[in-house]
Image (tube, rainbow, N blue to C red):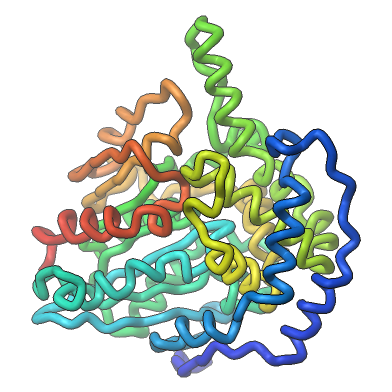
Length: 396
């Protein structure tokens, strides 16, 4: 098998887009009552408003043009199609940096980082902080499709990323990740510490063994109830958990059952992805205070036109089935220099992050009182600033 890398241009056919609009116009809407506060899930009136905009006003071609301002490529690694964007750094010695997204993200959630990181001078920065920015789509997500292989885990992605960077000619590189990207970055820092200049994650660090538990559908994101006997502490924890855990349960236990519905209905897909955007972000209940309709629908359209919901959801199930296997028993577990930007609203109430200092080679920790789970999309300027700061003294 050749290790070729081919140019790739994002273009969705008119036929696919016309079918999407027809399905949206023919949506059979669910009854929705006593749900103005979204307490039963996505509010039907807002969903109807959003999907009407999707069918009648949203301009996918404009979004395509924005994406195609950058150079895109595809290659095949371990039998899997891998799409990535590459923005060469403009500076004396750009540091290669791979940005890794999560679910329900796409590669485009990093759109506001690409320019400032690759061409800092054009965005008010110092040329010495330039990065060669590589933004792949996770296998089975977006344009890294189709994938038809069971057993793909998030830790396998670290192996794929190393091969990708080898093909691009980078011996050592930096990494940043959010959501699933946090665990990809952590695995790179564990298994391939010698290849990393360092890793930075947001909105929090996650232990790599987080999936190695008997009941991940119950304990994955938040863990056990706090030991505090204060009713208020327990109530705050449960309220936080209710916002975070629903999708993980469905994806772990029956991703294909859910996919049969969402693969056929763009309105259903929008509802499922929308709830995650609203509950995970620091939007105070108004999702458009963080993500515009165009932001939301660009992401939803990528999932729809690439038919990637099913493989993106199956990643949860396979992580749970196969778990994480350590590559060594040394401490810290993550040996590469590690930086973390903690978004306080994304961690469980009354939780301590002190464990990080023993688990990782922790050299940079900053906290943000605002912003939620979609760190790079919600607070891009902050993430750019922290990436520049963390890697400034670690460049070769």
